[in-house]
Image (tube, rainbow, N blue to C red; front, side, top):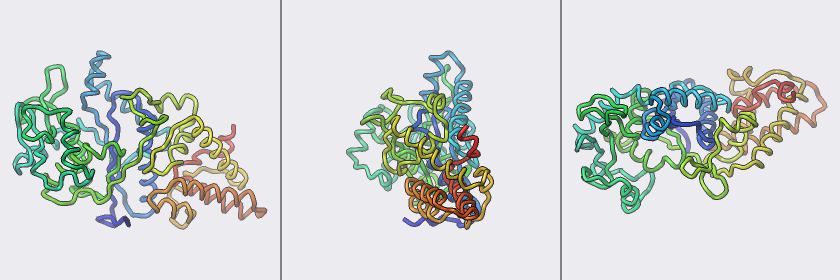
Length: 394
């Protein structure tokens, strides 16, 4: 589909961030890097881009980790929020326009739940508030799941207070040792899905242009989020374009904490630069699975060396930051064209290497310098070539 923002003067993007209870694995780095490239690209094409990437800092996994470490929940969440920021910064990820935290939006969450109850889309039962899935005729339209599929997913948590097995939690009661806030339904805490809906409404509005996240979030998280937002706003539209990145795999399996086959960005950074990790993450198309391996890292490192070698041979010595505010015409057309075609980063990287090849073949100093500046400008779009070439080879 051709991208057409709701307002050509302001593009709105929301990407689901991490749940902060431990160091994030490299798979969590993929959406951070992918949507960072999208943010950079759109910032070159439109006057204003508002990019929101959230932090989930209230969750049962956080509660369990804090209890295991005998540490206050807020301290654990704060510590791993900072660790996440440090990790993605090392991957060359720019700061989003806003980085909201779920615990800072309890008032907005409660307000949205109240509206859903008033409109007949939610109900309270036994201290819980649940979304009434049958009240939304469009439910299932995002993930294209059948009723049977959704029932299978719901059976994991079928509680006696649910009117329908597919109904999901908007608010749940908290025990004395768990974090909680006063609400019309008693002391409790929000469900996961409602957090994103409330933060999007506050920072971006009722309808947004782009919503990003991992493909594993399509159902139930994004399906539930879309349903409650449409119903809260009495609107058929919520997100104009959904973008889901594919998973990283280790062997034949998806990388995940639950499978125990993950490798954290924190650990990888002890032996590999963040720029190499970023290049590796961009080497596959964002919608496809990406097999993570030592070979992938070796190839990424060698490819970066070739690009930095071309910058060095071009005779210019600067960094891509100088081109952050460059006019669109300064960016190489093949790199721009690749990124404008569904964010095709492998093709964009191939275009970068083609420019590097031209530098090596050229015998004209002015031409090499011009191509070198193009390489750096393309590097800024991709978030690579961020240091002087001489420093890279030290």
